[in-house]
Image (cartoon, rainbow, N blue to C red):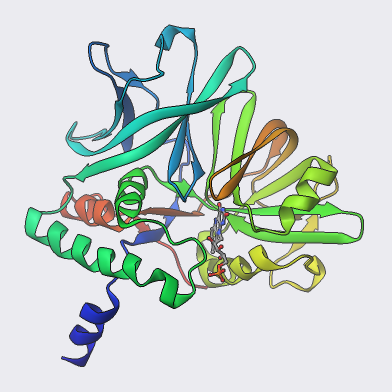
Length: 316
Ligand SMILES: Cc1cc2nc3c(=O)[nH]c(=O)nc-3n(C[C@H](O)[C@H](O)[C@H](O)COP(=O)(O)O)c2cc1C
C-alpha cells in the first residue's frame, strides 16, 4: 500500500530498458517519414536525436525529399517482423544543418501515439509519467523535459540506442563518459548530442577529435556509474574499473579489446538543451559481441509477448 501511494505521489518515468545488443546493424523496427501527398520514405539509417528540451530529432534529407519546410510530417515506427505499426511521432520542421550535398532537417516533436500496450495500461503509465515530469524541478532534474516530449522520446526509443563510452582529451584534461544520443546518418557523418552544460564540450571543441568504445552489456552498473563524469571537468582515466588504453589514431581514452571508433569534429551546433557534434569517421576497429543498449520498455514488453524477448544486460 505504501509503495502504491508513493507511486501515485511521485509518479514514474517511462522506462528505457538496458539490454544486450548482439547486432547493432539490425534494428527490430523500421522508421519512415510520412508526409501528406508524398510516398513514405524509409529513414531508418538517417535519423539522430538533437536536443531533449525541447525534443528535436534530425533526419538526413537530400533534394529527392523535395521541400520539407512548412510541412508537418509523421515519423512512423513499424515492427520489421510483423509489419505492425507500433508508434508515431508528429513532427514540425525547423532549422537544418548542411551535411555535404545533403542536410540534416531538424524537427520539433508535437505529439505521439504508442500502440505497444493496451489503452488502459498506456493511460496509467502516461498518467504516472505526467506526474513524474511535473515533479522534475522538485527532484533537481536540470533538463525538465515536458510530459509530451517524454512520451515522444519513449516512442523514438523503440529504435534501439547503443551506448558508447566517449573518450576526450585536451591539454592536461581528459574525460570518459557514456552516451547513447549518437548516430550515423550516412557514410561521412556521425553525430553526437551532448548536453550544453557538459564541461567535456570544451575539450571536444578544442581538440576537434573524439574516440568512442562500445559499452559492454555485462558491466552495466560500472557503465552507468560513469554517467557522473558528465558533470566533471576532468577525470583520471587510469583509475577506472575498465581496461582503458589509448586509441591508435588520436591517442584518446578507449576500452581495450572491443569495438572502437575515432572521429574528427567537422561542425558544432547548439540547439535547445544540447550541443550537436557533426563528425567524420576516421577509423573503426574491433567488435563487441554484447553491447549495452537502451530500448523503450513498452516495446521490449511487446517483443516479449511476441516471443522475441531482448537479451538481458548483466549489471556486472
Ligand atoms: C548510459 C548513459 C548514457 C548517456 N547518454 C548521454 C548522451 O548521449 N548525451 C548527454 O548529453 N548525456 C547523456 N548522459 C548523461 C545523463 O543524461 C546525465 O546528464 C548524467 O548521467 C548526469 O546526470 P545527473 O546530473 O542527474 O547526475 C548519459 C548517461 C548515461 C548513464
